[in-house]
Each structure stands twice: as C-alpha cells, then as structure tokens.
Length: 356
Image: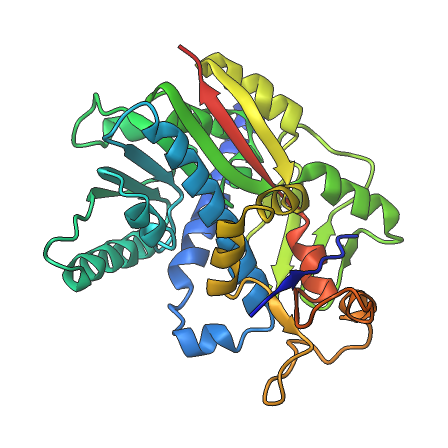
C-alpha cells in the first residue's frame, strides 16, 4: 500500500523541607509506575492514542537505529545503558540493533521485574542461533544514587546511554538533575552518545502563555501549571494528563541549562530537534517509511470499509481531509488525529556525544 504522509503540527529547615519533598516525589514516581498494570496487545490497540504511541515508538526506533549505526562504524561490541528503562519497551530495539550488553535501570522495582521477565521471554523465544545480548537489571533512583556503585563491574563503560521520556523528572532540583546527568554521561566512552526524548519546555510555556488559564490541552492530553510568568530553572512543576490517566508531576527542562551542565562531562550537543523536525527529516528515508507502516505509526485516512477512525470528534481530521481532496494525492493517507499531533509535538529529541 502506498502511503502519503500527512501531518499538521500546529539553607537547614529549608534544605530539610526540600529533601523531604524530593523524597516524597521520588516515592510518588516509583509508586505510580509500580502500580501500572501490564496491558495486553488487544487493550493497547483499543486505546484512543494507539497510533500516537506507535508513532513515538517508531521515532525511538529510528533514533536508536541511527545511533547504533554510528557507533558500529567505530567498534563492533556495543554496550548500552537504558536509563529509566520502564518495563523494557525498548528491549527488541536493542536486540535488533545487535548490541552485546545492556544495563537496565529504573526507579520502579516492579517495572524492573517485568523488564527482566520480558528479557527472559525474549531469550526463550529466540532461535538457538540467534544471539541475544547479556543484560543486568538495577532498581535505583537514578537522580539520587550513583549507578556505577551498583554495576557488577564498577569499571563498566558504555557506548550509548538512552533516556527516553524520563530525564525531565530529575529537574525537580539541581542536585537531582546533576546526579542523573552524571549517571548518563560519566561512564560513557569517548565517542559515546547520550540520547533521549523529553518534553520541550519552550513549547509547553508557549502554549501556557497562549492559554487564558493555567492549563491547556485537548481531548487526549492536558497540562496544568500552578501559575504563569514564573519559571524557575529547577523545580518548575506541571501536571500532565494523557488519555485520562493522571501522571505524577513533571518538571520543565530548560535546554540551554541542560546543555551547559552536560559540558562538565565533556558532552557536546550534536542534535536537538522537535518531534516534528525529526519526523520530517527521517521520513524521507524509504526504510523509515517502511518501518512506519509496519509499526502502524500512522492512522489510515480515509479508513477502509470495515475500519473506523480513532476519533469521531468534529475537526480531528480536517487536515487529512483537505490534503486528500487534492487530485495529486494518492489515497489512503497516513496521519494522526489533530489532538494526537498536538500531544506528540510537545516533545523533542536530543543527542550528545562525548568528546575525547
């Protein structure tokens, strides 16, 4: 099926109080993710935002694949740190990338257990001749504890550190952001990469300032700030709600500060793109288009006779409808609903390289 891609992205007591609040927030994060139930494929496919989740997953796949290709131009054996690995959603990406060793770390013990179970299942299902990377699993608050003290080999070095949709939690305080960054970068080899995805603070503040209230969003997400016009470098908290599920508080990452902090570990920013920019660049590659179709990262418009769109709301597909009416366009299109485009365009991709 030919898919035309369519998008429309429009100090003592005070210190004690701060430490206590930080500890409580870390507990909230761990409790939140420990409580999340593992959802089956059928249930995930019924989600209002299934295509957006697939789109984000495609974007991570492309990012990881590109970086592994770069690393393998220099060396054969690749070691990876997955910082904030969750339940192991990227395990297959690492397997397809034919890495040699993976260290998975996360604050939520239940998530680590599920990640390890996924890894064991993946090894069992694999062909006897199909090599699977070695792995170790660590439960740790990576914004407060040094991971190197928990590695089986304290001298272990990495070629890639991947931190997907996680780093912004550490910006609750300067010390936490610093510790998280140290865990990400200190054990990287020269020429190694720190890659990730994180909310775009500029876009979040822009939408907040355009709103008449302290919140904004649409039918799939909402963001709520406590107030406007006050954006501290650390601890700038907001509440994020996706598909009706209230998540734990998140924190703005002021990227120029993030970039400056990374210089302490001899890290140089080599890529910073919004999801829109990254998508527009990478989708030009035919293999990425094929992967996008295979992962069902875009929704078919118009749907086939037995299908239906993810949303029935008025205006959610006006952008696709307009493009589809052009005689030069071959149908069906691949798209996301307007609300999903708006939600996923809140994020950016970053890549740092460790200099020698």
